[in-house]
Every structure is written in C-alpha cells, then in structure tokens.
Amino acid sequence: MKRLRLKLFAVLRERARHAELQRDFPDGATVGEVWRALVEEFPGLRSDRDAVAFAVNEEYVEADFQPRDNDEVAFIPPVSGGSDRDALEASWLGSIAIGREPIDIAALEASVADASAGGAVTFVGSTRRENAGRIVTRLEYEAYEPMAIHELRKIAEEAGRRFTITRIAIHHRIGVVEIGEASVAIAVSAPHRGGAFDACRFAIDRLKQVVPIWKKEHFEGGEVWIGSQTSHPPRT
Image 1: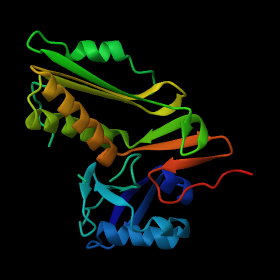
Image 2 (image 1 turned 180 degrees about the vertical axis):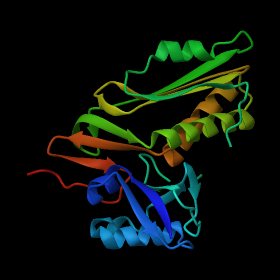
Image 3 (image 1 turned 90 degrees about the vertical axis):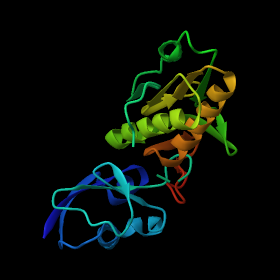
Image 4 (image 1 turned 90 degrees about the horizontal axis):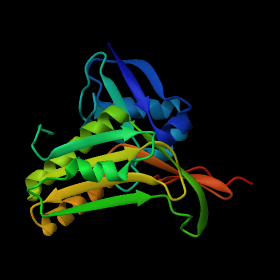
C-alpha cells in the first residue's frame, strides 16, 4: 500500500468540502483510479469527471501515471481561461510572482527595461464591472501556488525560445481583486516591437490555458467559478 497526499482546489474543494486529504491506495494504483475513488467518496465531484487534469509533485501527468508512496497528487479543475501542459534559468527570465498585494505595474515595467531593448509591451488584466450580462462586484482568485509559479516560469522560458526578446516578467494576484484592480500583468522588452507583442500575447494566452489559478466571479445575485462547466447557482 502507498499513502498519497491529495489536494483539491476551487470548485472541487468546495464540492468535496476538503482542500487536502490523505488516503491509502494499492501500490499499482494510477492517478485516474485515485480520482475515481474520490468521486465515489464525494459524489458531488461526479459532474467534473471528464474536466479534471492531474498533477503529481507539481507536474502535470496523464491518468495512467502511478504515483509513489507519499507523493502529492493534485486534481486540477479547468483553469480560469481554458485547458495543455522545463523552465531553465535563462537570461530573459525576469520576475515571476504570485501575491495578494496590488501589482506595481511601473515596477514590473522597470524590471524588464534594458539598453538593448528597442521596445516594450505590457499587458494588464483587470476586473471589469460587467460580464455575460451580470453586474460583477469583485473577483476572487485561488492558486496551487508552487505549481503555478513553476508553470509561469515555464511559460516565460518558452516565450524566450519562441520569440526574440530581452526580458519578460509576469505577476499574478490571488485573493480578492476589486473592480478596476489588476489581477495579472505581463511586461516584455525586446530589440523590436514585434517580438515584444508576440511574446506578451503568447504568455497571457498560455497562462489562461495551463497555470493552476482559478477565478471566482462574485456578481449581484450569485457567484460562479469561471472555466468550470457547473458552479454555484445564483442565491435567492
């Protein structure tokens, strides 16, 4: 037998009413079999059966992966923008951070400034008042922080491989983000503007696909996890 440390996030955490669990499984058990056992234990997870990704020790794995004794197995619901899956220390890799404090956009831009760069591009994502016909009151972000940092670094490293850039920095907030406040900011400097634009767009698009950060939208009358197929119904 092997004992596994199980982690649940966002909508899965709420449905199971647990963020962390420890359970024993046969030595040959796969993460897919572990998930199926959780669904049997917590029937509220059934609706997420086909949408959940798996990670072992902060790395994405397939359902047939066999974790070892005392491994950490995380179940990843759809992230806030969509759903794919080394980050080497590279000269273009700048500040990568997740935190609860407001993002200092000017400091982020200054961190990528370089005399060799002829252009710089910054993307800032912020909380808007309306979405899908609803009046939004605030957003709330949750992250699997160690893995999220790891995935952000991989994105930044891949951006430098794909495009000719000088430096890239990515900061993301967690916790409550009020209307008008920034939840994510990406700054890229490059010898030419094209590389900066392309790398910045690649980074935000990829972030929305694979980084384990989840967004709960609070609106007048209810709340919803963005990216999940089902979520909390509006309050009455």
